[in-house]
Length: 78
Length: 243
Image (cartoon, one colour):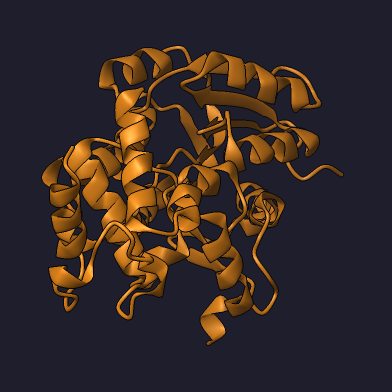
């Protein structure tokens, strides 16, 4: 799994945020367009792209895109 | 007098969540319960929580027609059935897939109809029996992310009305119960976190429901007290729909 691809998939879930705005350090909960619907989409994207079902509290407790990436990576390493 | 004295009731999805609580409540009202679910250990746990006598459990995956057929062939005649087995999957429209639709409809709709069909064909539903289908308030709303679940339950509501008409000549009743958000394990296992459900609690004038709240409605539907009720879809939601 590449961070670059992960960010690309992540950004696809937004209607307006251009990819330049998103980096591993982005705090996704603080993004303008962030909503429970986007959170649901990100979880569905992770399921579809990486076959990983992250838990709702993992989604909620992750602060940055890097955190999310690490969670997915930890499932992939299992 | 106990509400369900002498009755034999089948409960699907009996090993967890609402189904487990319903089994306990139904047994307490004097009925003999046949429990149906996939997991034997959990079925035994449910059984251990129940009072009364004569209960039996059946290990069966409702989505497997052969298993269902085999189970139905060993059942005794019924005074009531509570169709409680159900699954949930929250995904936004853009992630809906044929495979996901099939999976949720398989459990929440197809298997409910097929089980009903088998029980009716085998004449296992006694005259004046009551069929109770656990649907959902979401079948009447349009909450984001609930397309799979809500539409499977809406299909179920329609089936219930037709079943009610077809079974009426035998005095057999079919009704759906549409609860709002109820705190069960199913909530914990979904991809929607507890916090967002807690947030939604503010939209429920009477707060979120418990399995017992729905169980009391189930008891009423199973009892002879509801003998004139059929084809109905009871919304029980702590006042959520008032808004």
